[in-house]
Image (cartoon, rainbow, N blue to C red; front, top):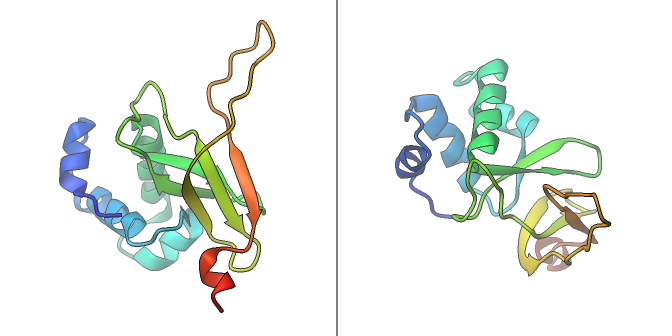
Length: 139
């Protein structure tokens, strides 16, 4: 996904520090979501664990990233759609978790609508499909 990190940070009223820009650049390099441990490995000593954690939390709060849990309970992050805001994420799409390579993909498939019982208010709905991704199927 091609993004302009500085423009994205300005849109969300965030200062464009070197670390914030690097995190967005790294996340945008792949079509799959990425976990904090994998981001730590890729960034090396550029950004310490606590700073990375704070950046990811800020991005999620501001509607820049959304979090997807993998099969092992690890949080993975992907760039949000342009319609996401600080008040509401609009990432109601299917996430595909490959059981072979363990990558998580955001699919351009709308998640099924769920009618909530009276008195219940859903803030987010997650729809995860498990199987073999197109890259693993091509092998």
